[in-house]
Image (cartoon, rainbow, N blue to C red; front, side, top):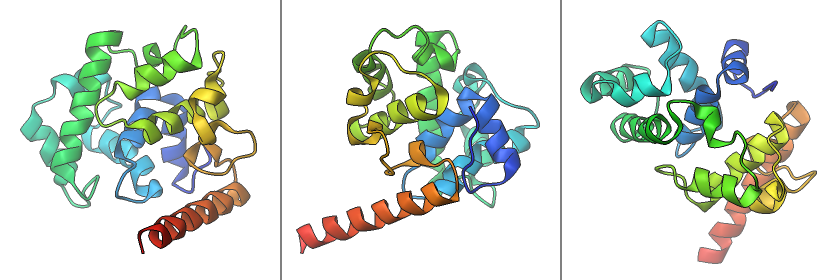
Length: 191
């Protein structure tokens, strides 16, 4: 992996080496900027003084975790909800995959099963699960049979729709253009 998101180099380096940081970035990537979502795992690590494990976060005192999330600058605009969500996701990883985040995708035989494992995580709807499948396939080399189909439009080669497609400044611009156009289309459809 070699993330090159428009975030501090240290945050990209954490995403590169920590599957948990990557997962938490995706968990947090809603109702805040992508940059904030994928920088927050680094801030969490800094506040803890070490890189946490999924088991550690699953077992963390909920009030203490909320305090870490809510301390300014908060890790998310909804610190209570997202501290809870992070803990719920980490509990699934701890319980189903013995605390090993990569267990979510290691040895998965098909893209459909990979999608189902991710979709089963708390807070992962269809779109977020497809984006994670695409991210794993495009950026991390996790490519079980049918992964592109399981990722839907996010898995298309040459697509520029999500964090899965950002590899440089040019691709970042294309992803932002796609998102702007999608929002405008959704707004027009409502109007």
